[in-house]
Amino acid sequence: MWSTLVTILFLFFLFILWKMFIVVPMREAVIKERLGSFSGVLTPGLHFLVPFIDRIAYRHEMREQVLDIPPQFCVTRDNVQVEVDGLVYLKVMDPAKGSYGIGDYRLATISLAQTTMRSEIGKLTLDDTFSEREKVNNWIVREIDKASEPWGIKMIRYEIRNIVPSKNMMDTMERQMEAERNKRAEITMAEGKKQSRINHSEGERQESINLSEGEKQRRINEAEGRAKEIQLLAEATSMGISRIAAAIRKPGGAQAIKMRIMEQFLNEFGAIVQKASVTVVPGSMANMKAFFEGLTQVTSGVSEKPQASISPSGSPPRQQIDITQPGRPQGGRR
Image 1 (tube, one colour):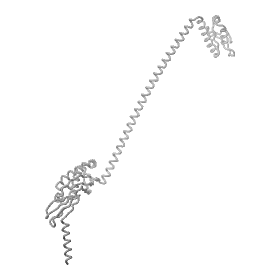
Image 2: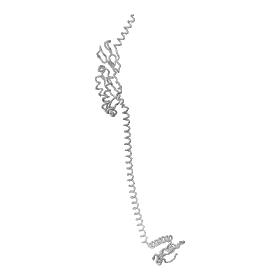
Image 3: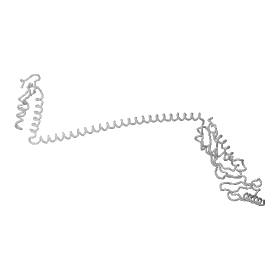
Image 4: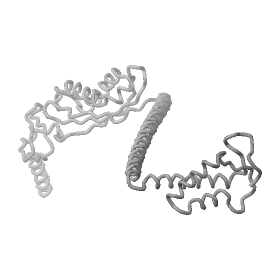
């Protein structure tokens, strides 16, 4: 019996000793009450409690906490129903206010975030809810932080996670997006055709300019070439005439010129006689005789050459006509 009593007393002493000391972790803050009233906030470390007088009333997480906001339906300004959910990031700044300022600050924060989100979404159109999500987040943080100041908590940030329109609205948005894509495609194709025509016309214009410039340069080059040719021919002719005149002034020059002219005359006359079927001779043979006799004084053997040229061997018979009296033949065929 005594051993049982000693055991009970020993266990009771251990229980009292256990209640007299408390170790607070680094991440927590502990609210101590003495005889039912607030006594203080225990920071991380080892603390002494008066048995049966002091007690631990609340424990608070001092790190940043994340609360999941459940999905809820909101109506935008243009009467479109969307389902919105999000995340709240908060931190306990005053453990005493967090314990006595409100019953459950987590539930209060979630409810306040939902009501504030419905209010802010109702101020925006459907398109604005997607494009101005950052502004909505800042508005919700500002409103919740203002309302939760007596609770001893601090709103760090709020993030809208999903904005899901209704199925009918999704179908309408898809059709609208498809129409916008088709519109942009048609505009792009029209712009491309327009630019293509502009480029084509610019190319034809530049081609015409290049052709005209080329034709202009070709005519200029041809004109310059003809002018240069005429100039060279004139210079050559002038030089030849000057040399001929100088040669004529030399002794025997006049006779040589006459012989050269007569030689060319006989060559041309012989060519005509060979091709023509009718022989044309001068009407006054006496003048021809005197002409040949004058040439014999310049060189010998000239009189034989014209005779061979006038009557070539093997030529067909031709009719002799007096050119001094047209239409009246002087003799028969030679």
